Image 1 (tube, helix red, strand yellow):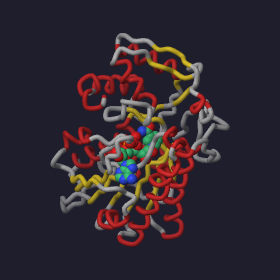
Image 2 (cartoon, protein in one colour):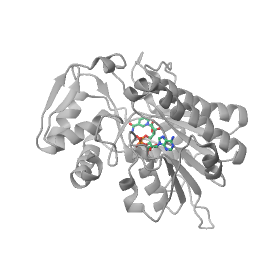
Image 3 (tube, protein in one colour):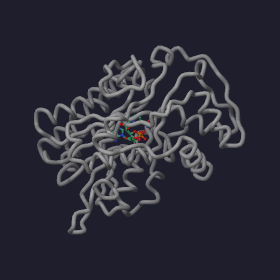
Image 4 (cartoon, helix red, strand yellow):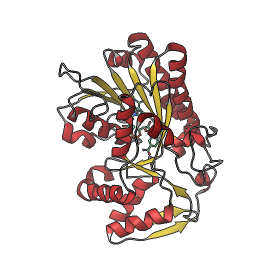
Length: 336
Ligand SMILES: NC(=O)c1ccc[n+]([C@@H]2O[C@H](COP(=O)([O-])OP(=O)(O)OC[C@H]3O[C@@H](n4cnc5c(N)ncnc54)[C@H](O)[C@@H]3O)[C@@H](O)[C@H]2O)c1
């Protein structure tokens, strides 16, 4: 395995890579890393305003990646885009749990139906392509035990979790029935530069960061004692690249997280300390969030560590420092 996890062939021509959702938070970091290692990278994204896509995410790699503004639900666009690719990182998705409940059809369209569109395009026009799918810990629902490993029952608590579970299962099924080289990574809460911070659609840490930089109190729902683990985005990119470069990943699902359980109050305190100022307050759960709350969660990532050799490398404090530093400088591109 090379430094990127996927080697540039001896010819010197990079691999042909497609990143769906490539203008979004995680996709844009993958794009930068892949382009930096000489791969031929195309990003497809529909830049829907409710999602995390932002052209500023790729401003520093402009000219080194091709950008295609298309919708993954569009079969004719996808037919054209999947042809000739060696690897597809499939990150296009709708992340908001609340939006998924308010508009279940839109969530199903993107997180479930569009995944079939991509996989069918690959099956027909490029069956040998390797596909890495961004799944989520949300599909486990409320944990029976901690830390949560891949054997934990899948019992999603919201529409988004059900559709992401279907999206993941389609990828596994296309491996089982067509022999396609697919793999899914179940990501825990991921944070870092480029995340959506104007609201909590992507992740509550985003709006916490904006509020602390705006001098407003961080709002924590409930007691704040609920625990989570958090992945820094560079570690998540490493996990995708490691799986892309491994022959052992085909047909597998892997948990990706930090395994470091932290209460929400402790995360808020850490942010305040790093920021050298700020405050938090506990507020009651809004009813629409209370019914989908999963309590405590943190990840057992032993499977990907043992099979692929990946493990997280960024401590929460370091990741939060880098993230706050980024938004102090570039926040204006993400505020509105
Ligand atoms: N960020 C997290 O904490 C987290 C956790 C678990 C799983 N994930 C998954 O990782 C993936 C990437 O998440 P992210 O945090 O980078 O989100 P993001 O919203 O920043 O990125 C997703 C991108 O997909 C694009 N997109 C959505 N629907 C599309 C469509 N139909 N056609 C083309 N493009 C479309 C959006 O415009 C956006 O740029 C998602 O599938 C998400 O479910 C993220």
